[in-house]
Image 1 (cartoon, rainbow, N blue to C red):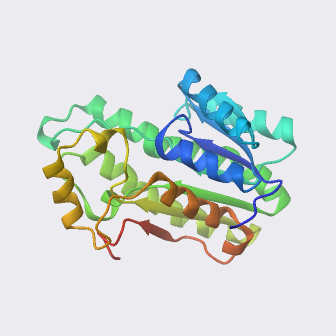
Image 2: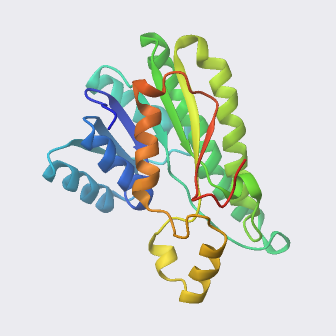
Length: 248
C-alpha cells in the first residue's frame, strides 16, 4: 500500500460513509488525519475509532460552504501542524427532485455544499501547498456527474462542475508540484442503498459489469493512491470507481 507517513490530510464530510472510510484508510497509511464535518458527535466517533486502531486523527467542526469557515479550518490545521499536504473534498448532500419541481433553494443548498465548498477549501489550502511546492487535491465527484441522472439536476450539476474545477486547478497549480484529481464513485454500499428493495438493487447491478455494488473502501484506497508520491505524474484526471458501469 502507498505510504502517507507524516502527511497532514484534511478530509471533509468525514463523519460517516465514504468520508469515514477515507479517514480510516489514510490514517492506516500513516497520515495525520483532520476529519471535518458539521456533525460533531459523528466526527468524534470517527476520530475515536481511528485512534483506537492506532492511527492519528483530530476533528474540526465547520461548514465548508462558508468562506470564513473554510479559511478557519485550513488556518487552524497549518498553525497546529506547520503545513498541509493533502485535501480530500468529500462533503456532499442531496436534495433530489425532478427539475420541474425543484425549488431554487434546493438547487442552491446542494451547489453550495458540493461545489462552492470544494472551491473555497482548495482556495484556502493553495497558499501553504504552494509555499512547500507539494500538494494533493482529491475531489470526490460521482458517476452521475459524467452521465446525468433524472431527479438530480442540482447534484449532477454540482458534481459535473467539480470535474471541470478539478481540471482548472490542475492546470493552474501544476507548475508548483500540486496535483488535483477527481474520483467518480458509482453505486456504493451505504445507508441509502441498504434501504433499497432487492429488486432495485438487482436492477442496479444489471448495469455493472463487476456485478456488485462498490464498497466505501474501494473509494478510500483510490484516494490513498492519488494522495501518494506514486501518483506524482497524474493530474487533472477523473478516476472512475464504478465497477465498469460507465466507461469514459
